[in-house]
Structures are given as structure tokens and as C-alpha cells.
Length: 464
Image (tube, rainbow, N blue to C red; front, side):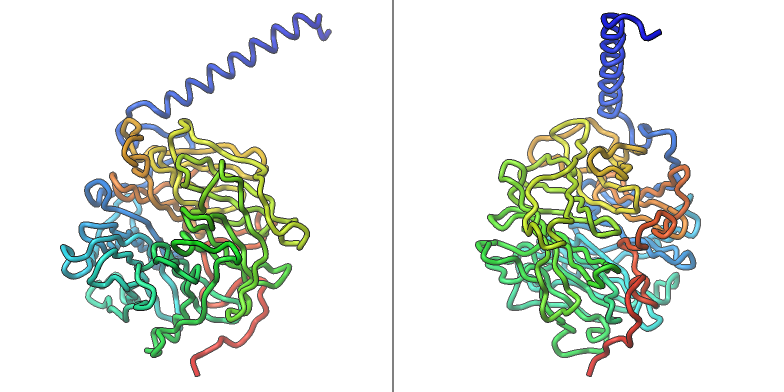
């Protein structure tokens, strides 16, 4: 028997109130003062932890994907800028095996934010970006190292340094990508360069390693016109192959603060002729700039983090109309996920469909199920920050800074700029291959030997 309408109404109201109390309690629980590692969901398992540096000295993290090379590279932000290598052969006992810092650190005002590894002709390399504000090395974009000989750190060799004298400011971010034409590319974003006419630079790593006089410069990804007036280039960069359109696509977030703000998709199949495919330009009340921009494996949806104005939720965008040529500018998100406090922000995303792994600053690691991009929800979290929230004086940008996911076994690593390196596993997530989920096997992880899945097999383009 369904009962009288009034009874149904009373019971429904009671359920809603109970859910609200429970939800409020959960939010309060996540905002309580816990020591790092004491606040987490039951499906998260701490594997290992390694403190690395004082507050605000640790930046991004990159983990190699081959299980036979269990190395994670942690960028050191400043004081001094550089990187450190952690051996995760036994993830329960992370071991710091190597540290490299820029020479004359007192003279280098700036940061070492993002690092990427890549494989080329059977050898392994690591690229560390730098962004120095003043001389010396104001034009230094990245330092490239041959790390093939690990774990013997004595065999690490500096290969060379990418410089842009005509575009000082260094690289705020970078992304290593295996193009469908066989080239190993490094995209670098020069976010702070004044009057930057280009959004991102593209470097051919085979040409660079071979000593090309032009450092292997292969082209640029522009900022859309006529939306000029930018004070910098893209903030973050990402690239992926779309097997349906057979296009290599670039996803640029930024600039972070400018009239140019937004997120943009380019066809970069022909590196000399990038072609704008889609623009995400929200109303100024939602954003005045872009930051992080990651597509789903099928390329239809975009996931963004925007930090200007600050304290923005993670947003989801349906790009189909733009990619089909029907609506070039997308202005309204289809969904969003906000943290427990409206004053908090997130930073970086790793997407392994249907999960989005987020380095959420003071909320540590947050994992979302994004199968329905209109209603994403948390399926796991681990607090690596462990302090009361800090919001004043820009303090929101503290805590979980970077993250990466190893597809072979599902190991999740976080770099927290206060508490160091963390390694986790989530129950039921023991590795990732897109084919197992009915989506292209596309993520930030590259198949350096074979190129993008679904791409036509071609002979790699080599230096003339």
C-alpha cells in the first residue's frame, strides 16, 4: 500500500533532511584537522610515502610506465629548482636515488614545475621544464637528460638545453607525445612571455638529441585570432590521437589570466598548419583564463580546471557540436564537481576512463567517476595535506600539486608540495587499458615504440 500523500511527503522530507545532515557531516569530516594520511576513503590503500622537502618546494611528478623501470621523477619548484628521482621497485619503501639542481641556485629566481619522460630509439630520456624570471637563464625552457642507465645514477647524462632567446620566460608546462607520423614531440608552453605570438612550441626530440642547430623546433600551436591581447601562451598542454577523424589533436588551456582566456582544440596532424577545431570560452563570471584541459579518450568531452578567478570547480564540456563544425564556441558546461569548500581549488588531472584522478591541493587526491559527465561523483579520496584549510594570501595553492597513474598496475602517485611523494592503490583498479572500457586506449601514457593506437603505421619522420 502506497500510503496517504501526506505520509509520503513527511517520509520524503525526513529522508532529504537525513541525507543533508549526512552530506554536511562528510564535508566537515574532510575539513577537520588530520595529520597527513589519517583522512581517506576505505577503498584507498596507502602503499608508500617519502617526505622530500619543506613547504612549497615540491612541484609535479612523472612516473615511467614500464614495470621494469620503476622510477618516478619529482620536480623541485624552487630553492633550488631541479628534480629528484625516486626508485619504486618496492613501492612500500620509496627510495630517493638522485637529485639534480640548477647550478648557482641563488641566482635563479623561478621554478622547475613540470617534467616528462620519453623513449626514443631504445633510449629513455627525461625533460625538466624551467621558468626563470630573471637572468641568468631567463631563456631556458628545459634541460634534457638521458636516463637509460638507471638505476645507476652515474650513467645519467645531460643531453642538452632548449632555449628561446627571442621568447624569454621559460616553460610553465610541457607534454611529451608520440605523433601519428612517428615523431616524438615535446610541447612546451611559454605562459609568462610578454606579447607571446605563439601559444605553445613544438620540439622534435630526435632532431634535438641529434644536435640539430635549431634545437629540433618543429612548429607552434597558435592562440586563436582575432582574440589577441594575450600576455602569455597556453598554461597547460595535452595531445591525443583521435582514431575516428584520424587527427592528432592538441588541447591547450589558457592563458591563465588574459582577455584570451579559454581552452582550445587544434588539429595538429600537419604540424606546419595547425587548425582550430573547437573553443571553450565561458562567460567572464565563470572564467577569465584557462589552466588544465584534458579530453576523454573518445575526444567528445573536455574536463577543465580554471584558476582565474580562483576557487573554480572542475567543469565538464560537451565538445561534439564544435568538433562536428556546427558550433565553434562552447560556452556552457554540462556538469561540474565542486570541492567541500567553495574557497578550495584543484590543480592537475589524470584521466583513466571512467575515473578522473585529481591533485586537489588541500583536499589531496580525489578520484571521480565521470561516466555521466553531467553528474560526476567522488569514489575515492586520500588527504595528503593534513592541515586546517588555508585560504589567505594565495595559500589555497598548497598540498597535492601533481599526480600520475601507472597503467600497467594502477599505481597512483601524488606529489604534495608539503608532505612529499605518496603511492596508492584503489580497490578494484589494478591497471588501465581503454579497450576494456569500450573507449580508445588513449591517455597521457604514450606507446613510444608503436605510436598511437589506431593510427596508420608510417615510417617515422627523421632529420634530413
